[in-house]
Length: 445
Image 1 (cartoon, helix red, strand yellow):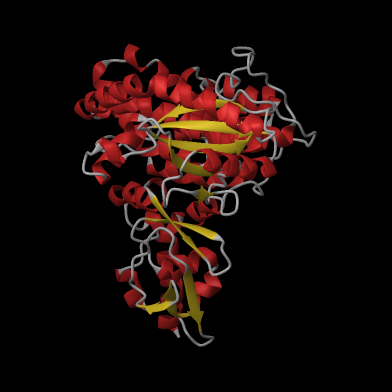
Image 2 (spheres, helix red, strand yellow; image 1 turned 45 degrees about the vertical axis):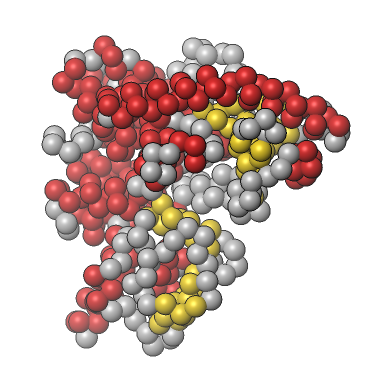
């Protein structure tokens, strides 16, 4: 991160814990640092269910996020530091802090593609919130690692030899272990049958170029038999959070099944650090992998930027879903404080479905979203003139729930307009706001 972000990180607790006045902070360090520190302070006032939740601070936070993502990046690093030392906090506070982490901060890190921070937050918080489930998953993981460590090491050596024969010698591999929470959720979907979870341990293959990704895939499939239905090309079709890579699952030949993830170095860093990597890449600030402790944020974001652009504080880098949060604040607040967080969580913090436009673009929506939610996610004008919908080429009712991989086509008509009945089944508060705006306007005519 740039010097402004690092300075704001160092000063992030001064307003709340040190009694420093905002005007004094601005006088000494400038308006931009005050803006970031104030944003981090407001986010720090969030509370999970059962405690004061400071709804106005949450609202202001997302508006600030829509203007400058550095506020959230600093707070995520701060929360990660807090979670690493949670054992020293009073027991009665541990569960609340861990629950906040699972409900707010870990999902936000995931949505921003900051997967490294997301995984560590989940692993640190899970034992405090779900202790019994944690012990179950921990034992299963330990058993899997014990049974498969030697097999994975042998497979990795064979992988390097196979790729070298194909001319891919400048590669490196490492292993990825599924997070406790992610494994627990997947086990629930698989009826607790761990033998049906193929990505507990995965082998990552990092290659020099995009072309090498496909070359590696061909070499791997030429040597090991792939598991049908498990080849995913996220380079041709990136995830909505811009994750790129190729995933395949192969039979190792000795009775094992292993997932292989193929990426370039840039894809790997984007996958691990997400928007933080992108901003650092633009700022051109070099933070070496081994310079931990030299800068406050270096221990959380250990990558090297390359370009020479100035730090950006505009909202051009802000994902559309954050802009939608900011745009939806007035409508969300109408529900009252008791429902506000639940609405936010339903729209932006929970697991998502990924569907396609007819042109192949990916749209990211909450679970149980339908064609109307999809239409407004594309553009308000499309939502406002929706007359019907097709899913996978077939006409469907507008209250149909979308599933992962659906291809959705919205049928529009110039004189069509939102119907108040849509409010009974639309999922996203962004769509609800747009529908109410039109319905209220028509009602006044």
